[in-house]
Amino acid sequence: MGRAISEDLKHRIVLMYETDGLTMEVIAETLRVSIGLVSKVIRLHRLYGQVTNPFGHHTGCPSLLDNDDLQFISTIMDANPGLYLDEIQNKLANVRD
Image (tube, rainbow, N blue to C red; front, side, top):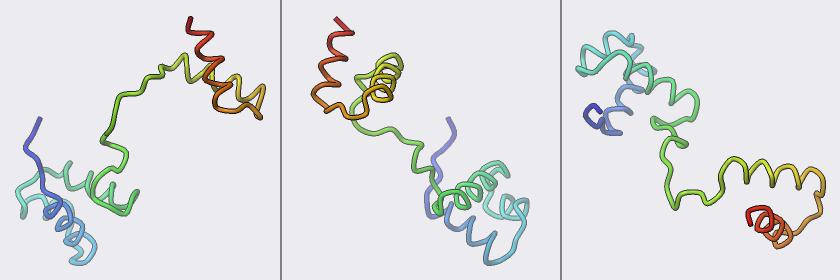
């Protein structure tokens, strides 16, 4: 894994590209970063309005549900849209046992 790039530098990349009108190549040479990094930062800024991917970092506890569980829940919800959470939990527990 490469070195960590600060958010300040990423914001500077966007500023140089949008405000100063510099090309990706010139920005990469000036800041001594790769053209790939410059391209990625500009793409993220266009997509999300920020220089980092808001969906890139997974925080919190790992999911206790696997893909089979999620598919089961989706199927029973399609068949019975009025189910309450406790009923869904009970059906899932019964299938897992």
